[in-house]
Length: 326
Image 1 (cartoon, rainbow, N blue to C red):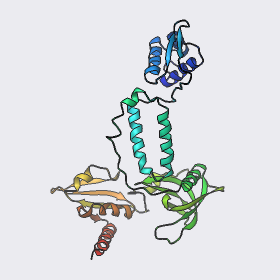
Image 2: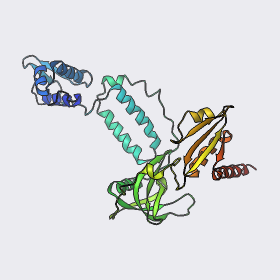
Image 3: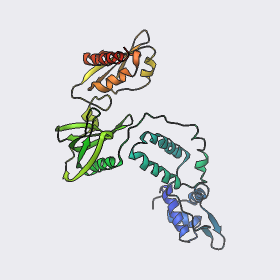
Image 4: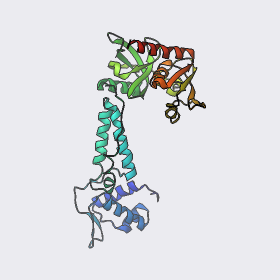
């Protein structure tokens, strides 16, 4: 047995010795686990103080024992830093409240909490967290649980899916076979990326628009060994991508410039600072939609400079918007 055996494994071994009524002491624990007596003492103290283990010493039998037969050693041990990370992750989970992911992971967090003793020191250090931390989320779309389950099953087993998919502009859903390759989350929306048999190409489907998904167990597909979502989508800006790259150039006013400079919007971005405090950001993209939406979100503080197709698309959107107020 390794001298550097992880503590949680040592704790479970000591728990087993106590549960089997072996009445271990520091000497027998050290011999069993091949560690020093000082390490054995620290482990027993940890069980008592941090894991709330009801350990007492029997002088006649010269060993430790449990004073309660109902005590159960938690499966895991978390430090205050670990628990803080779990707490933040649980808060962030609210972004998926309308998806099956939320319900299932919430259950995991609940079980995680039950694994720790109520009076463990680590809990006392985190009482201040709840009223002082919040994560504000964008509205998320609703996803049918059966649809989600069948998509994940198709992804896992490489099975073709029969989808009933309805775009916002469609009056009714269309049926199509799709080989699921990848699932991605973007701005609180989940997307399925896969090969559409109808179009004979790889497409992106918003999962919230899939009304039904059926796994075709008899139709197995070979997952492309060379498929990589990041490489396949190339210089995308957002979730959508195209085949041709273009160099986007966008001007931002001095008032908006500080907000642009504090983030990385695209891996290829280059920022040019002007003397009046305004900036121009340049990056390579391959689809106009998300770039257009991003520019419009900054209102009068942004102006598309290139390419011409992007400039015209932004102008068209703004013209139609102004027309709504005429």
